[in-house]
View 1: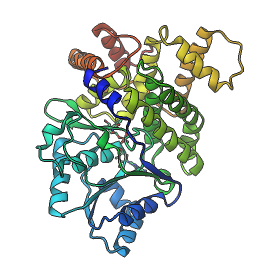
View 2 (view 1 turned 180 degrees about the horizontal axis):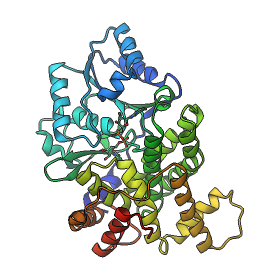
View 3 (view 1 turned 30 degrees about the vertical axis):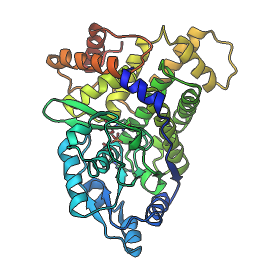
Length: 394
Ligand code: NAD
């Protein structure tokens, strides 16, 4: 793990946000924001969710409470610096006194940096990196609508640079919101393909945290619980989008996975997928989902005990199988889950001409940020990229 990140995680134990879940959770969160004194919130979302009426009840509530609301609806998947700057301008023009994000990781991450940049004395670019936030954020609240990134509990925000094809990380304990909501009224509308991709993103967080060399008993517990919830409820949420119990359990699984990985950091699935998304704008969850089984196979030898412990738990702690059999059963389980929720075998956008650049940036990301159980070489990443492009299993 990068030195600065290690120091940050030693010095600060990030607080978990307060959480509300179930039907109407968004309004409970808005009520808390208003009772805490906000009068001119900025709502951060995308035009799809706004037009689909997903914020209607929120707007009615805030109006009844006498709030003067500014709406920023320019969020795009893998948000850019330009998007964040527009939000900061909206905060300044509307004299906003709080930021309330409604959306997936893209809306939440962009809103984190908007809330930081609007109070900072530094220009936006100078907030990139670790522990760069110089002022308290504007009071910041989150309604997480995708159940994948865990951004509602992490110390991280990711912003894409369209010129360099790189994702820029903003890491600081101050990015954890005051409170977060998982509102099943909104979660049920996530389409099956996005439910699958974002749910597999959450599963990746949990597995990469569970196998991280920086794990602690607390992160191990949260990651294992997340895996249990996601393995059981993701197929249900995918097949029955209106099943509110499954939606809530997947959201809580994603939250726990986020709480675990924000303390341990991640691994090669993320190191590679970030570069793929930056090059081809591939949805983050989908890129992770396609990479996950391939990286599990790469780690199979060194992580046999870890995978076996997870499989033992999932089988109800009652099997006499050997470690290597259990480890293989766990990998097979992830393969089956991917297939059940319709994850494709390959990503056709990948171009071989980009492989060297992707591999170099992935190696750098892993070296500087992650406590991985086994180091990859450039050839290992190229082999994985070829397999992802062609669909040939590794
Ligand atoms: P997203 O936020 O990009 O959303 C994807 C799409 O889903 C959007 O078009 C949105 O309109 C739609 N959507 C969201 N909720 C919906 C709902 N309930 N019903 C219908 N449609 C809905 O997707 P994401 O996977 O949540 O976020 C990806 C971003 O998060 C990437 O930029 C990634 O780098 C970042 N990320 C951040 C962290 C972190 O800790 N901060 C961790 C992982 C990923």
